[in-house]
Image (cartoon, rainbow, N blue to C red):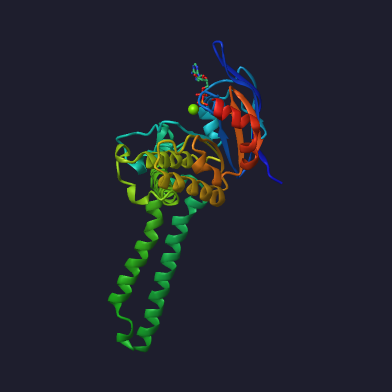
Length: 320
Ligand code: ADP
Ligand code: MG
């Protein structure tokens, strides 16, 4: 049974006299790629703005994972796993691809004055006890070796265990048991940064951006910028990604690649995508579900081939 991750119920939004959203209701299924189409000015971006918390709906509700989230600010939704990208990419242009991902990491302890002093050893009992345990097992091994050596001595095969070898082994082992102490005193924020960097590297790999990790954002192509935006959304552990025209202005080859990556993310990370897209020639073969809007209303919903045959959809495209 597919689960509904997002429900929009009778949402209305107007700007002055203009009714941009007119009693819009949609259900978005979890782990699916849903696409929203419609002529320019039909209210698609406004709907994404309402869902992501940028605009408050005038009336109606937005339900995410069973909770009423209507009117919650974007950062709250973001912390609940709703992330979005913009029609025009908004990156930190002078930062590198990797840095653009790292800035999206949530709740690094270094952001708080007090937590900045935390060390890894004090974060959990396990972290606390590890170095003590490792050091003591190191000592046990060394004293064990010493007693073996003493036994050999007693039987006088003097050359069998070279004391220098034993000493270097002991030093090596002491060193190894010191490593957990280094971890113990590592500031918590540093540990988090290492984890975040590993996570960013994994996301860049999934998006096929690994070799660009050190490029400044301004030097990327339009399509690559869109991918970095998706990557940044993924850093937040988003469950639901709202993408506003992810392939507008992108060459067809890269546009197909972006959609192929979206399917991969859906399958490998179990993500849900709600995508506004104009370019049906590209998007169609990748989508599970389609919504069509016209003049602020949802006029059709269903599988793409059904929606595209809908008379009102055809008329609104030809007439719009
Ligand atoms: P789409 O993304 O489908 O092209 P939009 O949601 O951007 O359409 O816009 C729907 C309508 O609402 C348009 O007529 C647009 O001019 C209007 N609109 C959107 N945002 C605003 C705003 N912040 N202030 C005033 N009018 C707006
Ligand atoms: Mg738009």
